[in-house]
Every structure is written in structure tokens, then in C-alpha cells.
Amino acid sequence: MPDANIGMHYLVGGGIASLAAAVFLVRDCEVPGQNIKIFEQLDLLGGSLDGSGGSTDGYLVRGGRIFEEHFACTFDLLDTIPSPDNPEQSVKEDIFAFNKIVPGSSNCRLVRGGKKADNALGLSAKDIMDINRLILRPERALQRKTIYRCFSKEFFDTNFWVMWSTMFSFQTWHSAIEMRRYLRRFIHLVPGFSRIKGILRTRYNQYDSIIAPIIDWLSVRNVQFETGARVNDIEISQNGKARNVTKLLFEGTDPVSVLPQDRVYLTLGSMTDASTTGSNSKSPPLPKTTGGAWSLWRKLSAQYPGFGNPDAFCKDTDKTTWMSFTATMQSPEFFDFMEEFTGNATGTGGLVTFADSGWILSVVMFHQPHFRDQADGTYVFWGYGLRGDRPGDFIQKPMWECSGDEILVELAGQLRLDNKVQGALKKAIVFTCRMPHITSQFMPRLLDDRPAVRPEGAENFAVLGQYCEMPRDTVFTVEYSVRSAMNAVHEMTGKGHRPPLVARTDLDPVVLLRAARTLIGV
Image 1 (cartoon, helix red, strand yellow):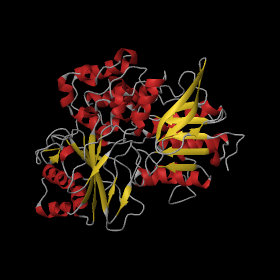
Image 2: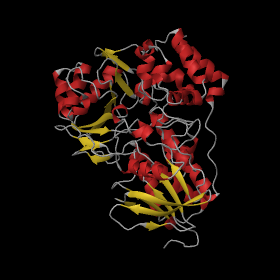
Image 3: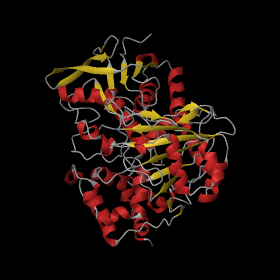
Image 4: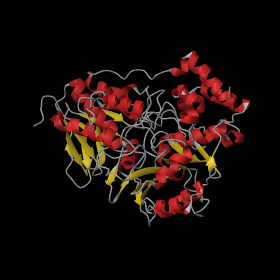
């Protein structure tokens, strides 16, 4: 039973931000697990870090987030959680151990005309000057400004842009503020950029490697999970400047009253909200609704000040959608072909992008097994199209309208596969996923369009996830969500610790010199 003297901690949303907050509450603030309750509208926890299915019927991974060594908050969290394969080792230790055993360095980042392409960045002196100019401009001067307005048309034809946009999922119409943050945050990765060096991988998909072990850790400590619980609205009272959540309102079930000693943590918005899936024979249906996470944020922003502007991110889904696919195979022919074609052992190369494809198609050949329960002789790979709105080169229609089989035909055409390998590819079980909000956090914005972790006057509630504002850090990363959780827990409890400062490798002269030499091509 919950300890009434301590109060309840309610977390709305079951993604990595809420799960991390629950760990910090138990570990750092000594909150009993039974006093923590997580509400998730779906039937599965984990949010955007997912992985599901089986060897027989096929697997599905909607997408994955990048990791690198400077994710201080994430590795602080994962150092607490036992590895699923070795309880004597933490998930953090497992990630670093795995990357020593299977180091990543791509020998085939780009493909053109069915052949490995030159990885030279191709930047002109003007392009480099424009990059420097963007890095040095204050964010206030970049409000609502797009990346396209910061560079010449020629810049977007360079290898640098193709590799940058597909690695991080940027489009020309996305926010110059976010591009600036990425350039600063990851400038130490520039020397290995064309080979994807410095990016860390998890041993399995991110659900099996991260989410499942966290859920196990929390479950042992009696944290409560309620799935299929959609919070439709939230009541907030105001007394002078002070504001407190007083009630959580659910779809189809009774409301939950929030007492003075309770605390509430809200995940607003979702990059995978309203996702739809397709199969070998069917394309994903067009999403019919915005989804619960966005509907809740819209209601809150309309009723109460300080909740930002969700429409800046979710209103124009034509500019925030892309489509991914996961293929499950029962034979190694395609993987063998890709090893020979790329020069990379499976799992060591990372993203392979078909730079001249209409969809800007990319694939990743995961280290196998990619799922903990994956049967021997089963192989899983993943891909996505950054421009699913455009027709393909071998399938003359938008990727969004394609079945899994049609996507494999396009992939076979891009690789110029022979009949034997193409025949093996045709036997794959394919699940596709259309995500209308997957890059919504990159949309051009004003500085106050994202609410603070602790909105002004908030006494018993905080905001988590990808759509709250944390200076200098970069959205579309696990680190951003975990940092928000660490910050929120400290603000709400006065215990634990504040997040460490974002690593400022952009202030290191050696890092800057190495990056400059790489951009220039020296």
C-alpha cells in the first residue's frame, strides 16, 4: 500500500522520460515504489524506444535514437540498471563492452547508382562560412527560421548534407535553432562523421536493451504501471501565482484526485503518437487522429499559461512524417550480400543511405540477434525513407503509399540485386510504420513554444520529455528525455541532484581544430 504520509508521484506517459523519473525517485529520493504510478495510453511501456514481434511472425522497430559517450544523464541512469544478460553488469557497462567488441566504422555510408559512393563532404568555402555563422548566431535571432534560409541551394547537394540529414533526420524546412544546437553538441563527432564513428550502439534493440531492464528494476520495487490509461485532461487550480494540479481525468475511467502532498509529472507530445503500421501487402493507413499526447497538450496550453505552443510542432504533419520498415528473414543471403557490398561485418557499419533515391532511402544491418528472443537462423534489418512523400525510382509512388513488398522492390533496385539475392529478399516478413510526428520537435519555433520543465508558478507538477525546454541540449535523443526527468525530480522533491551541465566540446580548441580540418577536407 502507498505511504499516505509521503504522497503519490503520478507520471503521465510511459516513455523513457517517465521511466527514468521513476528510477530517480526511488534511487535518489527514497520514494517507495508503491507511491509511484505511471499511466500509459498504449498497452506497452517504452514510448519511442520500442521493439516487438517474434521470429515466426516478424519483428517491428519503429526507429532508434543515437547514443554517444557524453550522454551523462542517460549513463547515470543506466549505471543503476542491471544488464538483461548479466545481472553483475549494468546496462551502461554492457553498452560500452558491446561497442568494444563490435566497434562501429562505416565503409559504405553512401550509395549512388548501385555502387559505393565517395564520402568526401564536398563543402565549399562558403558552406563552411555559413556553418560557422550559424553556430555563432544567438538562438533569439533564429526564431522560426528554417535551415534552408541559412545556406545556399548548393549546400543541400553536398555529401555533408545527405549524411547529416539522414543521420539526424533533418529536413531543409526544419528549425535553424535545432541545427545550431546539433552542430555545437556533436562537433566532436565531425572527424568520424562520414564513417559514423563515435556513435554507440546497444546490444539489442533499445526496448530489450534499455526499457525492459528498467521496467524489471521498477517492478521489483513495486512501482505501479497502468497501461491503456489515457489522460484526457488535467485540472489545475491557481492561488495567486501558485498553481497546483488537482485532478487527472481519464478516458473511460474515474478521475484521480491529486492531494496537496502528491506530485505530477507530465510528458507532453510524442514523436510516435498516432503511428500506423502496414505489412507485406498493405501500406500503413493515414493516421486519423492527432493522438492522446498531443490532444492533452493542446487542452493544457489552451486553458493555462506557461504550457507553450503545441501547434508549432504538431500542426503540419506533411513536414514531420517519415516511414520506417523492419524486415525479418529466415536465410542469410541478403546479409551476406550486404557484408560483401559494404565491406562491413554485420552490425559494424550503421546507416547506409541511397543518396540518389527519390525517397532518400537508408538501411541498417543490425548486429544479430537484434532481439533477445530471436531464433537462430533469423535475421532482422531496418530502414527508413526521409522523403516518403516523393515517388521512388523503381516503385513509382510515394513510400507512404507502399506495402512492405513494394519497399523491398525499391531496395533491390537501388542495390541492383541479382535474382538469387532478390529472391531471398522477397521472402522477408515486413512491417512498415508511418509516424506523423517523428520529427515534430525539429519544427521552426519561438523560444517560448516549449514549456519549462517547471512552468512558472508550478508547485506540484513538472513537464518531461522531448517538448520541454532545456538550453543547449538536443531533442530527438534519449539524453534529452532523461535530462528532463532528472531535472523534474530534483525540482519536485528538492532531493537527488540537478543534471550535470551539457558537455561543451565546442569550447575545446583541439576539438574545434579537428572539426575544421575535416570540414575543409585536409
